[in-house]
Amino acid sequence: MAYTNIEIEKDGLTATLWLSRADKRNAINQRMAVELLQALSDLSEDTGTRVLFVRGRGPAFCAGADLGWMTQEGLPPEQQPPLVLSRLFNAFYTFPKPMILLAHGRVMGGAMGLLAGADFVLAEEKTVFAFSEVRLGLIPATISPFVIRRMGEFKARQFMLSGIAMGTNEALASGLIDTAGSEDSLIARKDYLCEEILSGAPDAVKKCKELIIKVSGLCLDEDLFDYTTRSLNDVRRSEEAMEGWLAFREKRDPEWKKRR
Image 1: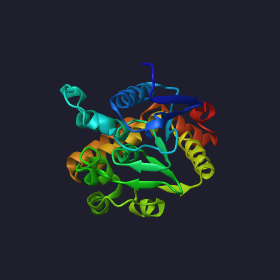
Image 2 (image 1 turned 60 degrees about the vertical axis):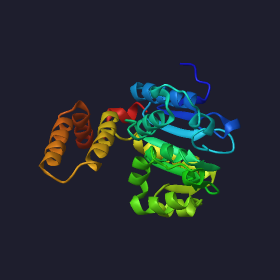
Image 3 (image 1 turned 90 degrees about the horizontal axis):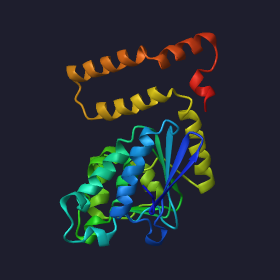
Image 4 (image 1 turned 90 degrees about the vertical axis):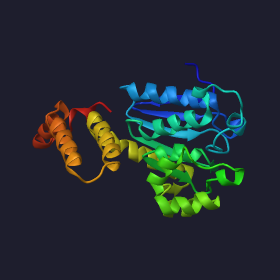
């Protein structure tokens, strides 16, 4: 697929995905959503990508969903914005490799669904965040499953019901973001995170993320314990685990660290 609303750059084992509708403040329209879904699918299968870094071109990370698309009539069911956005936000949340997102400028409405799906969220110091839906006569329906997981029910209630804009201090306190700072400091933080992530075994990192997503939605019962037992049994017999144990005993780096 030829991309017109996003860009992808590769640097070693890290891919950078840029939202690239700067003239529209990177508002998500149908074309951008389709491109993002395709890019995430491709990158998930790309063995040369182990970490995904998400950014936005121009003055804002993302202004949310494009209102022209949201109000468009006559679209077939599979192109209806609520369905497409639900699939997009879920694709961010379930992306099988570590995802780092750097926000700047303004992060509004539906953009929170992208942010909430990332594993590490960085934000420039003057970034403004808002769940603006109720002020437009809408509700934050498709982002809610992911935002509530990230910031909790009652913080979500406070900001979603009021539509109040928050700065980085409030976003940090709410759990919406993880780190705030200057662009340079955040790039340094991203580089550090990538270095640490790449120290882990590739398949183990993917399976760890899969485990976390699965376990977070389950009750503490025998089914859960059976699942975690099977998961560990499967992994501890893997080639990566054998190499990791051997490297530890021989006091050397495992082979995957040599391939970075």
